[in-house]
Length: 158
Image 1 (tube, helix red, strand yellow):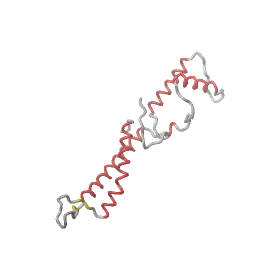
Image 2 (cartoon, helix red, strand yellow):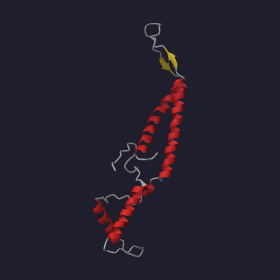
Image 3 (cartoon, one colour):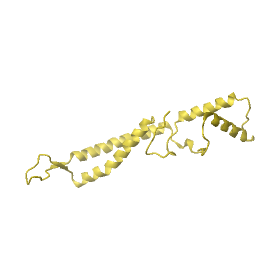
Image 4 (cartoon, helix red, strand yellow):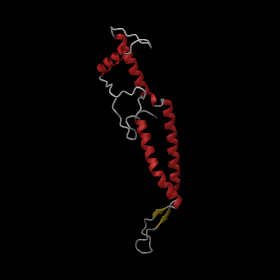
């Protein structure tokens, strides 16, 4: 799977799909059950044989164990939660676009005044101060939310 760049997220924030984690766990268990050596795991047993098995598996799969995020990997929300967040973001974006669209439509055509008092035939839009503030304040958040939703859809969160 190619590494999809999510520009608005740091490497620490990028989600690891649960099916990928599950696949890695099953792969590791398959590796453990195919070994000749037996490993006993419990709270009273030494942990070093398990760590050695993890190192051997990682070496076999070409995985780096440097800077392993032992407690961080499960901090990403469940896909159902992400789906709800995406739906809420889409709804918020639609509302923002609707409000901005209404404000934009309220513009009055104003002649630029070129050529004296005669209109040049290309009047420019002029908004009242409230609509102008609405348009200015919604512009950047709309762009950011659109980009975030596009990135989420690229990685399968729809």
